[in-house]
Image (tube, rainbow, N blue to C red; front, side):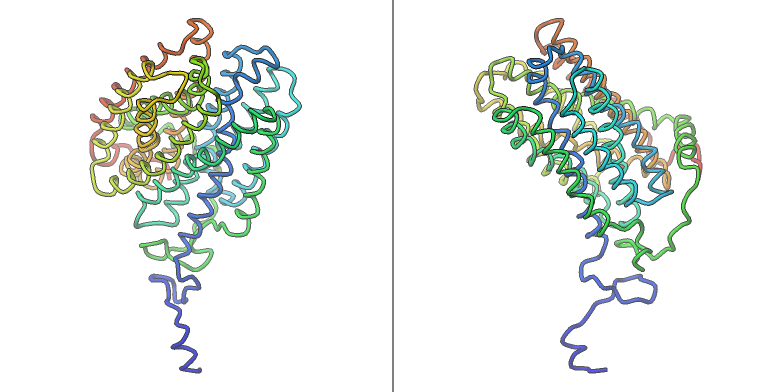
Length: 437
């Protein structure tokens, strides 16, 4: 051995690895987290489109906002209902395979929508295909990666990965708004399809299913052997749901998170742009405001992850929901043809609170349900998306009936107050029922 060479190029072993020096100066968990972040951005690109396309689709095909909202609601519902099965499938077949197939499904749905001519095709392509694909890369994906690869810094990593969806919004909303305004909605749909496909090689080459695949321990933890692939993934997801449903905390978490989805994805992401356009604000300006939400969403979610590592998750959630509800009550007064300072303040405030709820909600799932927390969180996320789906549809119907979105803003604000009360009554400690292994 050449001592000069050895001292000139030291390689620090990764702590807790089973007798092997680490190849990575940065723990491999951070590489996997980075790939996950980029993957969520690519998969979330399609979520930038629905709010931009209400008016173009209505003008071209004559579809009502209720019909378009129904397609969006199918997408959101399937996004949520797929998540717990996706978490179980990742246990069975591996993260790489599931995510690569999911990205390809999103791209197929987005591309097929270019040739649609009937409302049922909108529901098939946007609702079914994109919903199944994005649901397989939902927050349960982040939970699975975080649980496998990290023991320390889980709250922070959860916040960063949750912010990836906002980052996709930040990148794609202004771009898609400009494309829709200048070239129509079809080139925008092709753009998000290509964004999903571009990510597939990164997933296949850099993602790994478990730290043991590369001879490492999770970040901040002890080395463990990779478990055998879990069989009966779908059955396990259902069994975990039935066991969790026997506990009170599950219904409180699911109910509050349904309101979270209703007041974010279902309401603001889907209906803010068409509502602002009703007040004669240009679509590009309204889309830019949503992109600003994405900027502050990243800050708020990462900061929420940091807070979750240090404070009671119940109190954090209660504060988040209460402040969100108050802000929604003021929104109808802020709608103007131009962007005024009060609207900017609302956008910044709402952005900080947008998905700040995710890290403490996931922390409560871990506290209550232990090793099955990723699947339980998948079902809690399903309730989030069901709430979003209902408001995406009912918001469009309300606009068709009343000619305004005001009643929807007020109702959502009241629901947020209910969510704040729900999380405060969750008891500390693990749920009474032991979940299925």
